[in-house]
Amino acid sequence: MRKIPGGVTAAKGFSAACCAAGIKYQGRTDMAMITSDSDCAVAGTFTTNLVKAAPVVWDQKIVYEEKKARAVVVNAGIANAATGKEGMRLCQQTAAFTGKALGIPESRVLLGSTGVIGPQIPLDRITAGVAAMKETLSSSLEAGTAASRAIMTTDTVNKEFAVEFDLPGADGSVPVRLGGMSKGSGMIHPNMCTMLGYLTTDCAIDQALLQKALKAAVQDTFNMISVDGDTSTNDTLLLLANGQAGNTPITQEDESYAAFCEALFSVCRDLAVKMAGDGEGATRLMEMRVYNADTKDHARTLAKSVIASSLVKAMVFGRDANCGRILCALGYAGAPFDPEKIEVYLHGENGDTLTFYDNGCVLPFDEEKALEMLSGTAVRFSCNLNMGKEEATAWGCDLTYDYVKINGDYRS
Image (cartoon, rainbow, N blue to C red; front, side, top):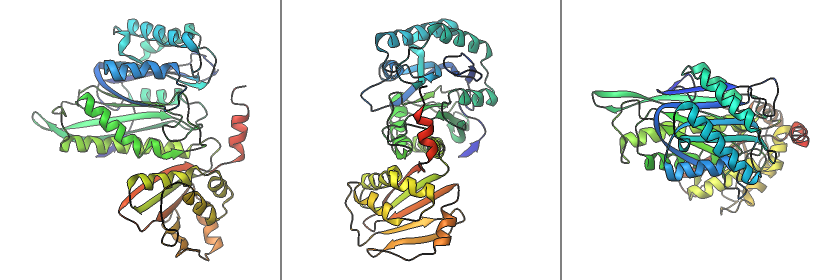
């Protein structure tokens, strides 16, 4: 597997475009479109929030019933959530207009919205945006990057990633590409987090296996990040596969499927970590690895508890090596372990390690060294449970004054 430049246009047959539709933001692009030259198998995962935005409901129907797609239209600024029948009508009208513009059925058009909950989106701005983007669709890497910027809200940087790997084809191995883009900075918490994510691949793969692979990848990537403990109404992750790479179609869980899953995990992990590090107001990425656990679920629960703790996040912001806060978050997580047998470590960006806790006691450590290690752009902790062989890693960010400032007037 090889990292390559680009995002949603890295794979064969995909194009992207963006425009400034003026839906909420002024002076910047706020709509994006992704299209494929041919029908795609589509998979998706969505918010677990009972209050689901209209685009989520629309996309679920396509993913679970139609199982095919050709285009995605996304807007930033207004979420089209808690908008009732009018919100669903907007989805249908947007899909119909897009379908007519592209010459495809409206049932092949997926939708995404992100932003303020409650307001209605002006249909005329959406349709004008679609019309403009249809004329500028491009398969260039630059078009994919521009699209990744257009879907940002409080994000400070765009997020995209792509890989290439080899699979068997009719005349030997063929290169297969998988790339994606995502947005997310606040209201980030597992199952899922506030995010829009769009993945594209030219791999030929059965739709049921595509869905299975995506669901598995999400478990240890997007479902292992947290910024503030809030789960949004709009969370959507979509994966489109158009089969244009020319590989022998993946129809069973064989070596080709394993290679595809590895590539998918790599892209999802990179995008998830970028989202965690770009949390609203954040100054540092946080990582918590729990290993030698008795079960995978227990490892996940413990790791997520630490990175979701407001006290741990504030500790990292203040660069205060207060190991007690990590122990506390582990202890209330709900997964069993013996406090007398665990070890807790702080890891520096240059490979240095400090032992915080062992044999039931917080250990003395070099405070200056700990301060230095907590001052990097990424702060990493780990915990050895000494119970088994399972492990999990979770990612988050520090909690700063700016988080409150950003969310104190997000709507106004």
